[in-house]
Amino acid sequence: MNMSNEDRDLQASRLFWRRHAQWPAVFFLVLFATVMYWHLDLRIADSVFFSRTANDWIGAHTWWAVDLIHTGGGWFVRLIGLAALLTLVSGFWLPRLRRWRRDASYLVLALILVPGVVGALQLVTNVDCPRNLDQYGGDRPYVGLLADRPDDLPRTACYPGSHSSSGFALMAFYFLSLGPRPRMARWALAGAILLGTIFSIGQQSRGAHFLSHDLASAAIAWFILLALWKALLAPPWGPDRRQVVESAVDGRRKTPDQADARGR
Image (cartoon, rainbow, N blue to C red; front, side):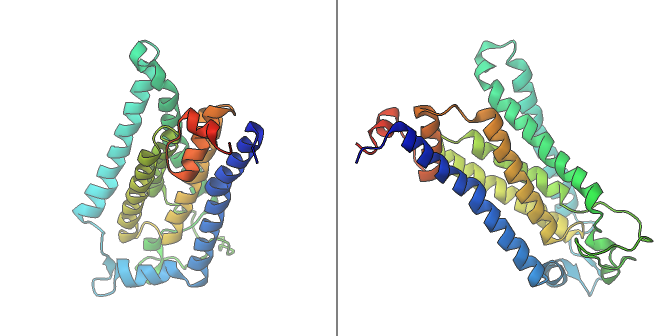
């Protein structure tokens, strides 16, 4: 049975949003529930990142956690953002860069919005860093994210994880590669997740964050980037949009002839 263009559009759209919105939402909710139910924040901190022998965090004052992952990683992301900004601005004068302005604007916004939203949430959530807790050498009791925090405790800003959010913000390259470069998109996604994970490990080893803090950053980054893609990059519906969606879903590039020939 032949399928009309409208039906193919609708089918492709539903599958795309199921795989990029619904499934990730379920995935993150399951992860958060698992972390909370099994108290994995404290268990992982106790067994992996905090040394009872030294009474300190294994990454505290180390070159690899402080200088390489935190300072160096931060500058790495800033340089990417600066390159995107220069491309965006130069595109108004240099014809050969004009076609990259929309992609550059997406990347600049991604690298501003993701850490910005995470930073704003830190001021609202009022959650301590692990190194501030009395069980890890600090002077404050552990208070869960949704628990009633005593009024006499000073305000703090450690949830979600800010440094890891800058790494996860580079998942923007996945959305930039949707459609024309599906294989590159998958590699870009894997690379950004790896970098965000490295940033997370570095910060958790310093007692700056728990696992749940960085999971929240990853979730926030993903859905901000998805919304930005919808607002700035998604082409109007038709053969071009269908190719973008189908390649993102199927993991392979489709030519217009191949897309039009489906169902015939």
